[in-house]
Length: 318
Image (cartoon, rainbow, N blue to C red; front, side, top):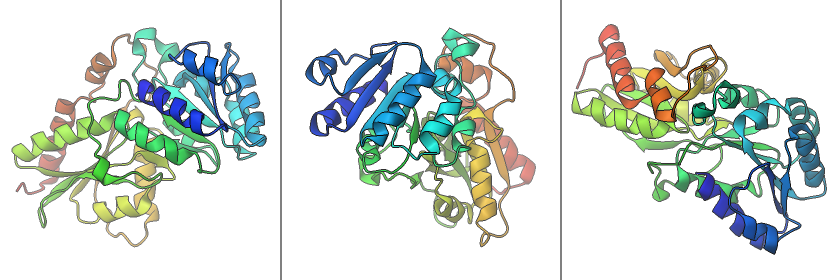
């Protein structure tokens, strides 16, 4: 997914001189951009607070800076500057977080950011987006140019497998139904974001084979969240299950529950089960896949959890 971002921002910068790329202490493979567009490419040292202030200043002059950094340092170290310099002023800064969630667990707890979705969605004026794959990242970036205000984008590791579809389109703030349950069938609604979406689709296919039908709603924009879509698709579901690679406290699942509660015309609200990371720091080292396994986020865990919920609630299988 990083490569998709890299290639798209380069092409966008060639056509729009307002596009500025700020890399923090690491080359993402855009030396040609530094040579061809020296006024639009900056390689900075490890000084996140200062960089955020600089980017906000550039945005005040009409530019659209894109800061690329590890999600852990992009969100934690300059948090005050994100609030005061960027969001309070509603500057058009794009924060591109590499390795959100468990993607960089091989580097340890300092690099493993598990609360970025919770933290960033709580900041007024901040838009929060977690694409599910590299193709969706390519569809997203051009739409950020006219978008007013700051945006945080969490990049999933690799951006594979590809589960998004071009024919579904893409709009910031609009959820996408990736899998529809059969008409009039008792079914479970899986609501997912980011790297959990491909697992939601895989789990839904496995569950359908064993008699539990599932719809899959991919919510790439966590803020502003598509309350109408969530309420509409939840209205005929027997159970709603949210999936996120983030702590449950204040995260994506919480945003979905808020959407259901705030959708006052939806009564009664179906039962909701949230799947995500526990309320503790990740001290384990490993790959994203090994940590998904350890924390119960892989496809077979989702299948097991949904099956247990269906059995416990006595939901009739089809």
